[in-house]
Image (spheres, rainbow, N blue to C red):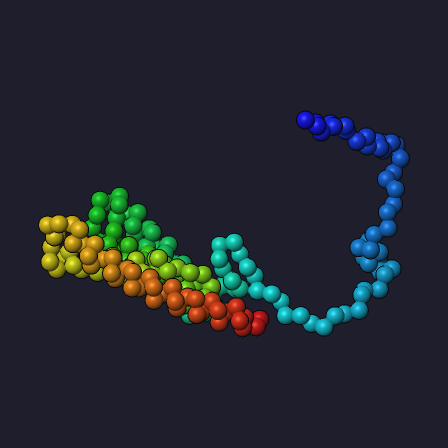
Length: 181
């Protein structure tokens, strides 16, 4: 079995009393104005930003202009949730959860339908949970709890499939013709 040699390469040590040698650098010469800039190339269109989280391009603009309405709704809803939890239920908990959910839904719907980021599971889950809550409030708690799944799973599945198709179309439109800045 041949072993690797573990020879160390010797490095030349610099004398601390001498200055480092000057190496020509295009960047240094450009700053000093010695080298003319290269001839300009035809203008290229900037590539949209890609992110590891699955985003493509810039975030879609808010329908409220520059006002952060959704972000404020999420913040106020979170405060209502915290107050409701401290008070152990009540109107603050219900109002806080509704306001926070509406703020989150506005952002996720805008990002999903513009093709910026997929929020398929969240957007399919909200109507399924609402249907479950309505079913329980109207009919009451069913004896076999599996009956709830018979309502929730089809709603979630159909919406997931439709929303995923819609996102694929929106993403393709975003990639094929990115918005000009």
